[in-house]
Image (cartoon, rainbow, N blue to C red; front, top):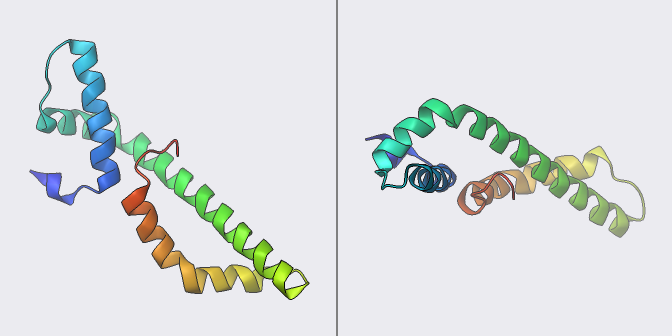
Length: 106
């Protein structure tokens, strides 16, 4: 099935959804059934929330970088520090987020 195309975060969300289904039904639910239901009922909202959470955390990281670099420079670096973070950290940070942050409530 399309299971191999799922990210770790999506698999985590589906496993949580599967556990909820099993608790509600009082019986085992296969991963494939949970996947099908999750895609139909939960995926869109989960992905939208995940994107919002990612953007908020990324903004926090950029602001932290801007503050640290501005403190080092003794002046507000503003856009210069933001662009520095984007150029030097954004790609690796997003990779880290996809690999390590599974829950949208994190």
